[in-house]
Length: 298
Image (tube, rainbow, N blue to C red; front, side, top):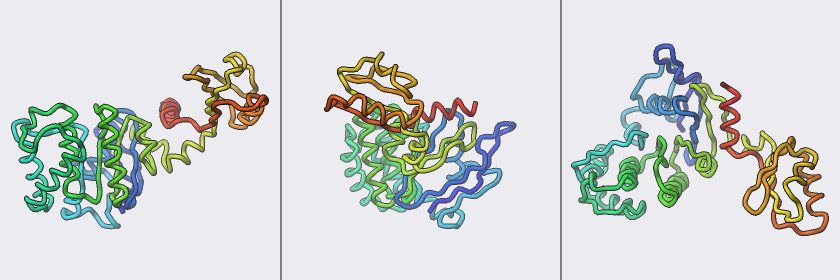
């Protein structure tokens, strides 16, 4: 179990991280979100002991993280860094051996990972011949090949197309099933919603939201309604009690409700003549909550 307890860090007169406390258990994924400069990367650097916290502690099973434990941490930095004139194999094997792997085992695992992440190219190819996406896959392999128990991923989906983002997503889910402790940052709220058990939202270093992802969403009420009812127009929906705003959305309409109770009366109205193709009442998306909370703490 990884525990961050009352972490604080300042740079000059800027409070980069303020009183951050969070726990990550085996088999859990924590999403760390916030605007640029919110304190996400600073938090990762304190965990890794790249920089020292002004106060607070980072522990693994209640103990400071030792050098041996540190070798069990996989890290994908936001600023990607590979040696362009070296081969994929040279870089991966070197780092794998630093983390305690035997050379032959690392070679076998590299082949498995290149296939799993669909890296275009061969292990002997120079990094400078790789596309940006394939180089990012190699960086991911560097972070994971030695089977780390604790994984830190700083913007892992940045710059990836949807197919490759899905590959990374599936990989994180698989690692979670295997019992890894994972913390990652992302600006894509859909990714955070899909794979995070818990989240922490930072604003200028301060924690403004923390907890189970679905529970956080539900706490804002089920005030988003998607309806497909061909006999009703946008004007009809706008006139219904409790509807604050109406937007066209595909084959139907998205209704923003003043309160979730309004959904019952709307359901009764739109189904009075029987079947309609769609009626779905949901809490706000994480992206909507993120925007709301950031603006609320300006």
